[in-house]
Length: 195
Image 1: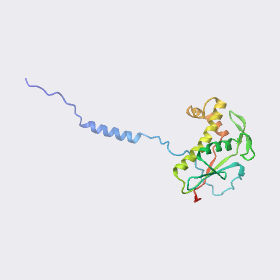
Image 2: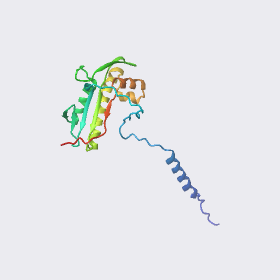
Image 3: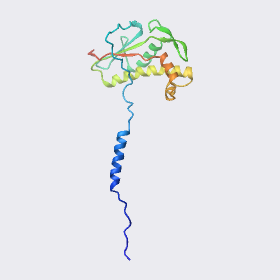
């Protein structure tokens, strides 16, 4: 009696199926890109340009970075490690200092009538400013806003600001942002120099 070979599976079409699956996943897969800075660009200017509202000097926190990565804040040299606390004090103006930003009464849902600062942070970089310094300054300013928002969220809602965002509690997040609106005005880099 002759011995039979075991039956084989025809695998020639498996390569075609694998290739089709690969193409399918490449076409249908989306990748999250959470890199970069979360900045909202201003809308395009209308044809008829209106005069921008006048901002009092006391409401503007001026931050300059020169080509040597030195930080000049409100006319004084400052270390990057001090920027967050200086920005927090400016934004919140906790003691209603007359040299810090004015406040106006605003109706905020969930908070009622709240004093909101009229602050604006003006950031100007030099063309020679390093990318590393630029990112550090952006991070410190964003951290100042986030810490203030976090403190307010814990005080009012008993949760951190990040927890409200994670829970997608948009109403509370929007209320906290209304009390501390992030206003950073960034001008085009110039040749300020550094010497």
